[in-house]
Length: 495
Image 1 (cartoon, rainbow, N blue to C red):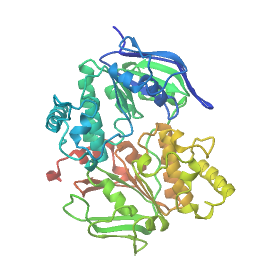
Image 2 (image 1 turned 90 degrees about the horizontal axis):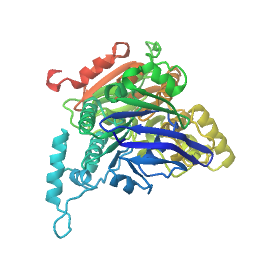
Image 3 (image 1 turned 120 degrees about the vertical axis):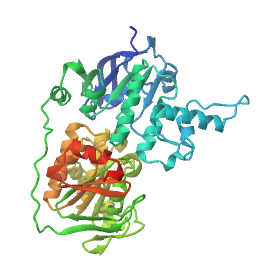
Image 4 (image 1 turned 45 degrees about the vertical axis):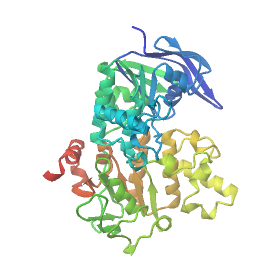
């Protein structure tokens, strides 16, 4: 059987970095092939080579037996390669239907775009995939998770020999992940080859037939998924054992003061007001399906969003909107770091020093560089030069830059929305350790997460939200992944 996609001896270097070193991989039609590795292992570079976005320094790529000679995305698409990228590419002012059919817009005999056909064909495709989306809706009004599903629909709108999915569940909650998995299986059963990149090994064992592990730009392991286990794959990914059990919990003092309090706050779609108290040194997790209100509540607590009703108090005083909230000591790490937290073309130093901690060093070059190095070490950012553009870092290290910015600010409350999305397992546990260290120092931490294991590892208390309401308040030591999933999945009328 001809391979759906294969590469032989792929080598690719950038100034000072050998990103790929003689990598060969073959993906068979009708299979799901997982590509694993730490951030910086070479996964993204290999994907860019396979999809025509990068020309290798050495080696060849064949798609369906045909060599990819023009290394351009258009040439790869002509051979049947489709990509669901980790970062969303949505035309916000266009309809969902136009976004779904962006690569294949139906036209009239005069060559003009037929809006009626766009909406009809797009809606038929959305319905066939089982996606609860309206083709007429404005794409910019959707949640991040809904936009990800629109991207999925676009990726599958035309027949595909190869579908590349790069961290496809990073912004999805449990019910949306189930939809994605169903679509992946449909594509596999139709004969498409799927190259699936994920840091979540449970997804690999649920979906994948074969797995390839990259480390430091080299292929270090290949296996049939049925012939391996979770711990073995982790050892190959990190070249060491990685602990993945529940993290030790701190015992909160019974007299720990309330630092942040939301009183009678009304969230979009809610039927009753929400009250939340966050104590010094406490880690509170906000959980719930996409659109359930967890991110909305986090933004209210961080001063990013003003609630339509109710109030938020910091140390008993009304909390102002950002940037006043930041100056008052509330840090915020948004879910979309590239769009809302980073200046991608600017230096790492500049990205670190845009927070409240920068006012004393911004105009002093030597002091700012020294401060940047200290922040890089404190945030455990892997970067050899704080002067390089932040876009050159891996996704995990970009997230650590955002995190390091608030370590510099010495904030009293830290609110994080999906803090480890797109971050590998080793980096996740570094971030967990840092959050617990902050909590031990008395910082109040609020985390929005769709990763149940993450919630159970970190939280002293878990608030489960649905429809803008808090439907459960669970002690951290009683929270379990299956229990949280059940609470999120239960019909609202039964609660």
